[in-house]
Length: 368
Image (tube, rainbow, N blue to C red; front, side):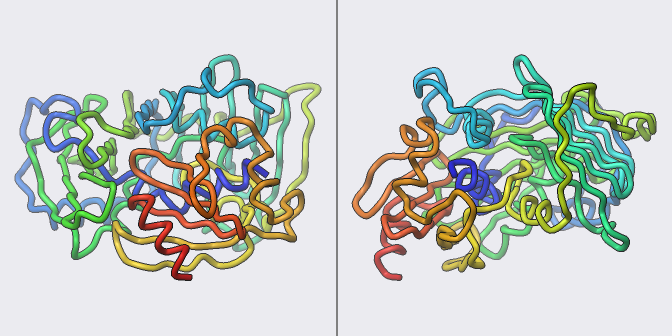
């Protein structure tokens, strides 16, 4: 139950969770050889024009969301929701290998384990060394447009975060290009996005855009009023050469527990993943959105018919003590709060989420 809410959270909040970065000096040091000058519109066109890349790289993610450390939250029940709390509360490393849109591998390096998401044409594998378990599915013909399912708790790439961010930004956003930066040894444009309104938790966004390929190399986040980024995902090493094809050929290790899945199940997971690949969401209604841009509020409802989810918030929250302690009781429900996104779970089973103050979520809940 816990994982279903927390897995849904990044999908709702992802454009905002990405949406704040340092005004100056938060991205890596300036590049030695300046890139040709470009306007914000030209940098945006450079991003939009880049094709599915072939690359190998290492990603580093750091978070300063204002969440309590896991050591203070007591023992975990081992549910998948725990990995999302881990993702939001500390540093993480992943290796990424891409060769076009149908061959990919993401290796999330945990402290004492490793998780892999591998796509090789129409074959998808998800594997966790922690319990030596794997999920396998075969995409049907014509499903090439589907992205591979992601590992539990996997961080998103800068490209994925930037895409969500740029889809959110609009007329209420100021765009600027600051002096060039250097990410993973590559000169990049420093594209800055700053929300104009005061009704969002987001302060500003920095996207480092590779000057050669247009690939986003780094995304940094600052909440309004914060000196340090709330979230940063960046390549620390990167090659734009095609990886060895053997990296996409996966076989589960001896003794692994293998589950056969279907495209329907996995597509449901990924449509709510935002960053990581999530299990089936705890909601069945299509979310409704009020407001726009950075101040959007998304509403949906717990699915009372979903397996293991009775639709009652008390039972929903009791699925994991980590979530119970991270969610604070407020009038009318429980609030899961970070520096750049708030989620309100009401006593009648509704969920409101957005990069807005908690009071705005409570007001939205009272008016519905």
